[in-house]
Image (tube, rainbow, N blue to C red; front, side, top):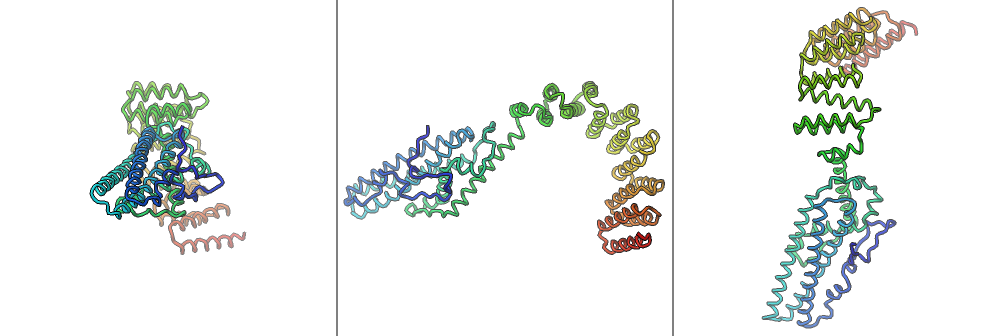
Length: 507
């Protein structure tokens, strides 16, 4: 059990009172015995002053030894790592240490005064030698205390966070922070006072330290609160992003159906070139994730496929693919496999897969889009255009417009821009009333910065005889395009043409 510190016996911090503004007066810092030592009014002779100096030195030495023990306990706690169980004990140790430092400083000030008084008696010889020895002891104590402070500050910068901080991960609310450790507020005040005036104490030991105002104390406490919150936030991030096998195992015990964690665990082993371990983790994930979580299981299958295509053999790739096709929707697996082959740059395997998908999903419009895009990305331009021709030959006519539009956009991004414009013009020539196609065409041209081409297309579209609803959409699109281009005069001109069209149509 931690004994109550006599330094703060008279200080009471309640939840109803503001702990920040609670101040400790100098009369409350010292014990009755120490108050008797600092009272020099009963010393009248050189002998009495010498006796008082010896008593003061003994008291200072006793408190210095206590500080050394406290520093050792604090360092032991910080090396093990802060958590909810030892946090209050850690705070109490700091509070007691700061209180002892204040008491030592007060005793040192009185000791200096006693030594000055002793000099006034003109005691020469042995008395002066004794005073010099006492002064030397005092300087040694000061240096020792200063080195302890510096060592403690250096250790504070190396505080570790225990890997399992689950009870300490919750960030306390404002009320919890203030009520959990009321004494820590006084600790923060004294710690900041001690660190800010440390140099001044060494240079001018006789000069009293300047006390912080209430506003300054409040500012220091808030800074300490932010520091604690930042440390806890880092602990949360460290737990949320496992960095060792043990951390991954703990995280997966809490979320066994999370495919993202399993895949990250696989990647962790792959980074260490432990291929077999990564495979084993993937298989374990498939056995662990509930069969109801189809999407999560599918994600793991895709991760296994990716692993095999990057690090496995052809036999292992084929075996994993066959299992994945049996356990998942085949078209989805083949579509995702296209992306894997694009990322790994395997043109020959991609071409073979495209041919296979032609045979299996020839009536599926989405198949032509995913295979065409994969071919474009791997620079198989002729293969991609062949896919488009296959789509127009095998699909129904109602699918042709959407297929042509999508392939036109792919041509613009990966192929020939002129061919993309030709495809759009072909669609608009056959289907002049497809305002939606015109909108996509204009957006493509605006993005490419072809201002003149945009105006040519819109001039041609607005000169046609179209229903009022579609003309309204075309004029609106033209205005939006001109606003993106940034020509205000042209915007006003188009608005005027739209008004003339309305007047002429007699709405």
